[in-house]
Length: 277
Image (cartoon, rainbow, N blue to C red):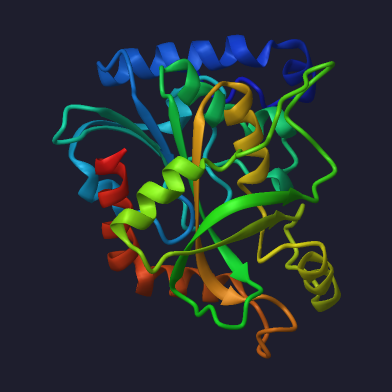
């Protein structure tokens, strides 16, 4: 079933959790794996990690799964992959992220997370490529997300749904990641709406209110993961310093280039973290 939530009226009428359950059933049917333990969303620069996690059981085009469509952004692969780790755990690798700026609505943005939860995953690992505010950070450096600031003025929660976001980005999982790489720094991720990059003044605003990382994904997905009862680990690849801190113009080509250069190191790190979960 393809792209069932494309039309706004369909998106408004459908129960997003029913759609997620239908998507999970599609994944079970197409991969032959009826349950996943961990889900991993691969952002810019993190794609090679899938090759190092374990044995690929099945790879399917995301467009064959209810509610998914082809990613709009270069650097995202548009597939769903089921991988079995050496320890026998099943990992659902999501290479089909829908960004808020694509205009499909929040339900579509968090559909992959809700689908992962419906497959049985209890841990959600969210990765992204992002801009760094701390001047000590350098392009190609991975950092843990300790918290977030949601500047989209939106939420995946609907109606009187009140979810506690204390320890949203699990302290337990961050400690586990640091046990593998003690040099990992951490910071607060600030999600802007996009698709334009932040202005220098907006970056300074994010810094003033407590942000250390700026990007266009992750926060809404993390909220949906917590609503679904999942434990969340967030990792950002610093692809550039943010506007006004970096003195040269920003570009998506720069993001892709930084991701390609850092990919071997960060992918190996992520695979070791997944193995330890």
